[in-house]
Length: 168
Image 1 (cartoon, rainbow, N blue to C red):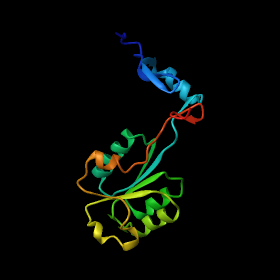
Image 2 (image 1 turned 90 degrees about the vertical axis):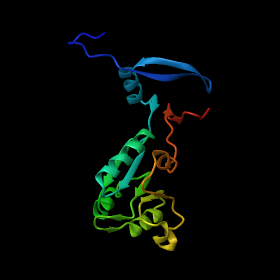
Image 3 (image 1 turned 180 degrees about the horizontal axis):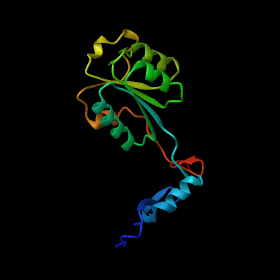
């Protein structure tokens, strides 16, 4: 037990690898793990997701889901204007409500598609209300489950020494 004047040591479980097979998990000091990540031995790639949602509680719920799924950088935009500003930086994925405070996200979604940025709609709107070119986009209706959001996301893989964890 830590004394009141001591900072408790935090630990993280990491798999012990032998070749490509995981044998067991070992506890390591979390500060050591942080130093290993900072040194580039183990890397967590930046994974940036844009959430375009005008309901703050829904946006925070989606943010929690995508963060648990591995997103390292989540940007929430409640308007098309703020979404356009956020989309100037590289994006890995976007989750879009159809109707937000200052309009409809159809044109924004088309712009993402033109830039080859994957996206999905998360909305209470009817999927049939989408313009024909967007009807093939993934669509999750509200209310949604965490699993429904998670299945939309591309996988995020940690890297080890500059290569993905499952590469030989």
